[in-house]
Image (cartoon, rainbow, N blue to C red):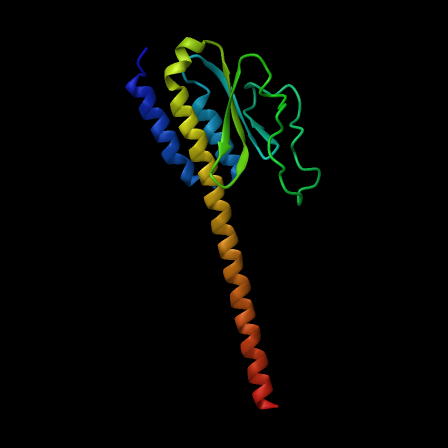
Length: 167
């Protein structure tokens, strides 16, 4: 079965629109909404570092993610080998990974495997795009924070030098 051009266009529009999301919660919601109606799919949810984002009234995970950090400041340890969501019958898992890090997965409830299969590689590509977006957004924030700290340090250094000269 060949992929339908209109559905391919829909997936490409989804990938393009991800870059306008303001945060990871909206990113997950955008992706879940964009993929839930693919042929053979009955729903979608996204797990980003143990935090599950599911659409109201849509497919829900049966249990919380065991990889979720205990405290908000804790680092994500990666998805466990025995992810409870991956073992659910009818759920297909697509990892959110880049060459540097793993961020979780998106899960599609696939009711009709034969209808969905032509789109599986494009969903995998979408998952990679989501991971790259997460990584790029976090890197940009870290860079901006470092720039602010550098600016503050420079201002403080100028202040100290000026006061040392005047003393």
